[in-house]
Length: 453
Image 1 (cartoon, rainbow, N blue to C red):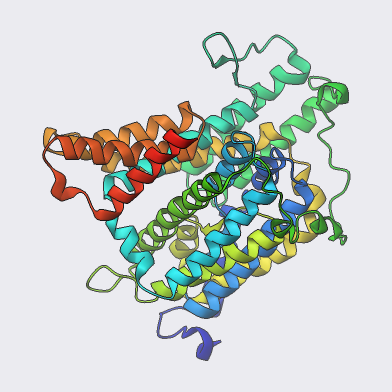
Image 2 (image 1 turned 60 degrees about the vertical axis):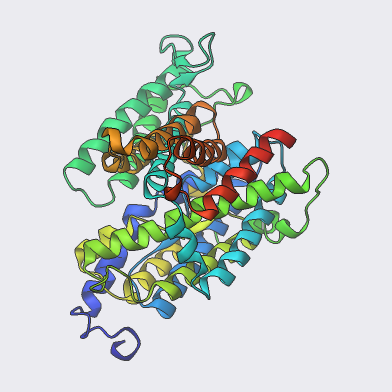
């Protein structure tokens, strides 16, 4: 242990590292309930998605622990899974097989970029306000999906409105009410510093739902898509469901997709994952005091490579982009400082494969509070946007990026509008020195998307 993870050098020990790994898992295990729900909406087998998510997390955590010796855990990224399901598959009409191929290709590109300094250079070329805008916009988009999954936000003549709680109360109204209760429960536990508050919020909301079913407030109606809240089982050693997604990214049909559409999807994954990963690594490392005197993370290259390998393997297994989780900061707060923390989290993800019947039985209204809470946590980036007159050419494009994502129901549209508006506004306001060559290229590509699609 000492030779592999350099525990004494990092002022830690085996007990502390294992405790940190367990803490990190508890704070991010909600992804095992949420990801099958989100990707299931794209037509994927939820059981297969859960197993794929668990195994991709194992690969990512082990790579991070053994290659970078850092206490950061990885799993299917929130926002990127929503982009795959709701924008690419349901919005653009592209099959999930092609979407996974785009994730696979993105992972390969990331592996190449991570072996050089190109990935860091690209990240540095994007203006900081736009990076923050992307994060905030994704947070709002995820929260909006949570409101829809809860049955709180519904279609109407005003495009969206709040649901009628009394209409179909025993099938839909009660679910919306339970989701609201779940948000309060999750928020209160989070504010009080309860470790794993998001996961506990899911479980408590689900248990309340089962109690409502027992006393008749919730009535299953399979014909209208309302099913029993009680799981058919808890443990299963049958992992054969993985066959529904394993390797399916290579069995794709490009009919009605178009090469330009595929490139747009590929670079959207690339763009968001890049910001998410590097931003998380730097942010969590800063809180842990792991940055050097220049504010850089010494082991960032193997950390980025671990992320890229996990993404590539995850696509083959059958899940959306795998990325470093900001919830790793929970384990760091407990004292995790080495790769042993990540290895511990990875082992727990491996064991979670056996509980697939339990995780996939969790209803959408129980995972909705988690989506809304994660949206709030991503929303905190808005405090770093400066609204002084001298900064409006930075802040306004970020604002347009933020509102476009939930209102146009597309992460890629937000990124497109943010890039285009940043270049146009700064160019016409006489601040062309702020625009990098990469920003010109991105803006031109996104303009072509609107012209030719």
